[in-house]
Length: 224
Image 1: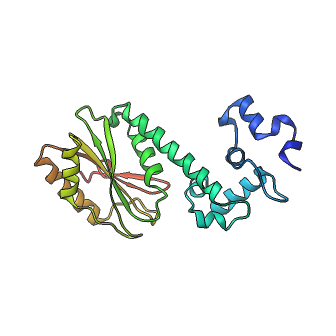
Image 2: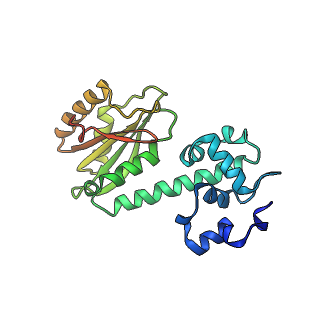
Image 3: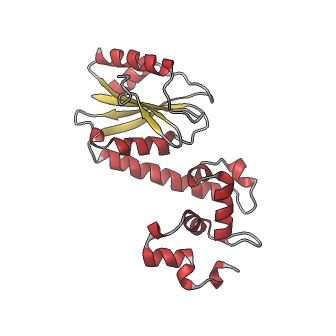
């Protein structure tokens, strides 16, 4: 049975209009985005199947074009839609951060970083640059590495912070392996960076390690 044949109150689009997006399940939200299903599967059925295959909305939205194309009914159009939705969400969170004192809402910082870095398949490092009021000036990618490591140079971080007239910064990188626990090299690099930044009167506020499911603040863990 196609969705058009469902009772009106059970159709995802009509349900959203009547009760709001929060009332919909992950599969129903995804079905609206997909718009159509495949032969023998409604859009909701296809959405449920994809969520079962990938394990979560986040993993599905972060799949590359080649991976999506392996599933019937999916292709470049779906990949483009998912990439747009993810980027819009990242930018909205970025706007929220720019409108608030960052340190007053560490959860927003953590959420933003998980969306920005959590599903990266290689190690990526970024810097969140802040002004004297701890408001976000800019987010800058520092490096992209391999599955296991990347190289970040302290002198480049200092130059970037000075060029942006930042008074402080938050460093962040992801662990593609799934554990947000800091390594010994993470701790040592953080201390070296903190000391180097202090020489030019810039404060390292925190260093976050990010995975798809969690974040670790080195400051909260007592490493700073």
